[in-house]
Image (tube, rainbow, N blue to C red; front, top):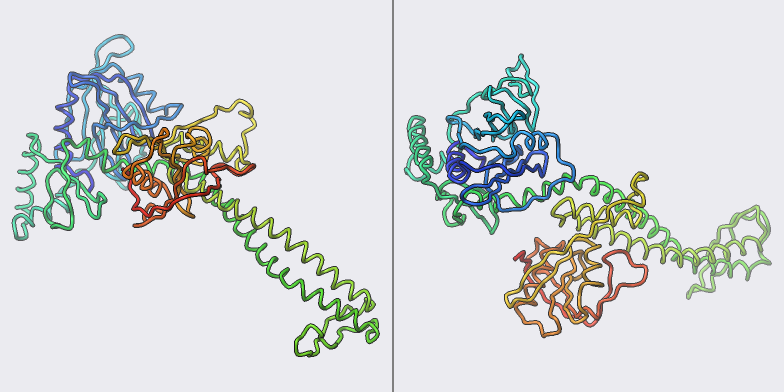
Length: 536
């Protein structure tokens, strides 16, 4: 559900209790629509996330670490200049609005204490984060909006006085349905208003239960109270705080969205390269099929050579007995009338030799092309598994090294190399499990980091991560082997399948052929486990 006014009131209560009196130590802007304030207070250090993302705007305390750009955006620089060292005086919600205001006390350039306000408008497509001065004049905002007098569209621009947007009335559909479900009958508009006001007063006092709605193991919605209308088909998962709820609910989808946006150029380049290789393979397969008829060309040459005494220059075809036919039937052989009979026979022998050579070359080219297609698909899968800009930068680096992306002339020879770390897990018995997130990491993990006695895992015949179960020479237990196999299945193209075959073998049986592309290995003496993908 969108963060409606009642749910936002419950969130505001939680934030007010945690943040009032806290000081802003740092400001980050991990993405275009997000600001993170590091706040130090009596309750310890906290991170306040203010998201003006139109798809899921919200305010929350977060425990997740977000990757920040090397160069902070201008709005982030302004907030650092104006807010760092400032004190949060409280959290206010505009009446019946999806708007939170954070009044602040900060020190200006002259050393005087002044008031500022940070306003989060959590209103879907109109979501915004706005910094106001002591006169409530807009200093700047994440999303500048030009007004339109003809449509009455509100302007949100630096220098203008801030004014609230047009109010929106009514309960969120989910809550309206829940009220009727609990009442056991339809409610009138007045009854809905009364019940909504009662709920609002309740959550303002801190009486709420952050609840996630889970269907088929996936989060589908959330609320400030248990939602009963869906029955046993929808599980209810309660959380101690809205911050923990939102971290779980939004983390995966926002990571996917962020990576998709930042990796769009990579996906486009890779898709174009993959499609070009696929087209080339299709043409070569067609040529190879044509070359497969080469033996008949040699036979035609033999038939013409055996019947030269019957042929003359200028003939367009020759009808001769086909001694290669078990039934001895006649065959008509096309001829070039400008060539002599001997030249026509030689032409068929020459075409046979060319087709034989072409078949050998095409077979090699197809093997190379299919390997290239396999590699490009594996890189596309790596982009899908990327969890941030660092992962994408490592993939760009790999594609530059392999020639699929051009190295920029300005940074040639002095670019900063990135070497990300694989994901790390601990098995039920305490063994370490490492998961590569792209081909470069897979290479380092398998050929450099892993001990020869460790166990290597990879999904069978589909793209996926290299997974290493670190055994340190001891025998691996069944629980650790299962967990490593489930991780290999999860971090692969088979993630959405119920059963995925995963091959595993000691690292000593895994080899990287000379000249092979990143992430490509061969292995022997393996076993196969069929598991259900699990992220653990």
